[in-house]
Length: 399
Picture 1 (tube, rainbow, N blue to C red):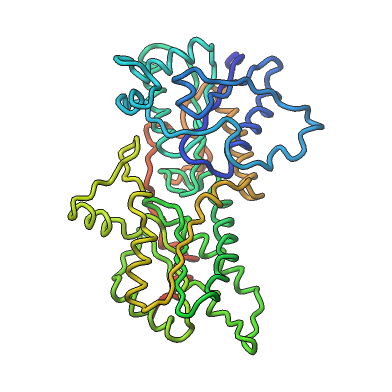
Picture 2 (picture 1 turned 90 degrees about the vertical axis):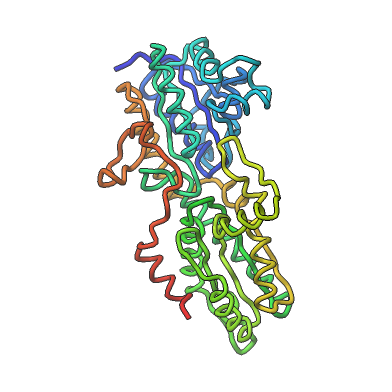
């Protein structure tokens, strides 16, 4: 068992309904193990580590902590920084010329006498943690690095369920329960609900499934023109399922002709190849982020599909609504909190045993909860379209 005095946290990437709760749970669990332990939070992720911007965290008394798990966002802030992208770190002013981000980060951790570093984020955060961990080992600095898998996309290899994802799916469904009523504002109305998820359609599919399940329990009154069909989802478009956009347009036009509205759940990563090729063909520059991904706000998937479907379905009005910020900003629901507690408790035990890696249920090891080697962590795990619930839901969208 290692001697622990200083424990640090950083959260990185986009926010999710788990970050603040993870930090608090880890702190409570460490307090049970060690009497005199200090907690350091590097502000705005790796940016704070590079710029020595940090705060010291102190837990409230147990009897005064009611509601502490009811906060969304990150209590120490986030940012998107890749420590191996020297030019990006230099351009943003996080380092000086000729400085190496990994070295700066390692030296800061050493200066702060950190024994354990917890990184909470998605694949980019934890692959960056892998780079840092490998650098520390190579330079003989003893530091335990334990990652926790956060992303509403639920697309981290080889992890079964990422923290924050199920809450985001539920909140995405709740969002549409209000937005769907906009189809009453116009004749021949299309609603495109654009859902976050770069290369993975899990969030789009799962939120649609939750919405449709809740819709079944809702009572409708056809005698006053409140028909279930107008509130239902008519199409779910995700990256993992190839679709012929012309055939889909013909199918949706029949629905439009019969019910006067069409409701679409669109993953922001669906059909991006079409949009990218079109922009590049027209010599339109598409900006990339620090990790080399095309910026999705530059592609504007929803806008592209809105223009296309408006023409094909002879719609009078198209409304594109993005639920991403609404969903990812939520506090965690009960199911997520249970998973947060489970993974955080195991993270503490793993750190005490001086293990390094990412905590999660390992798909490649019968979903066993384990400390997964950083080098196995990858992004863009595709959604399993063979899932029973998805196959059953997909039958609703067949001609």
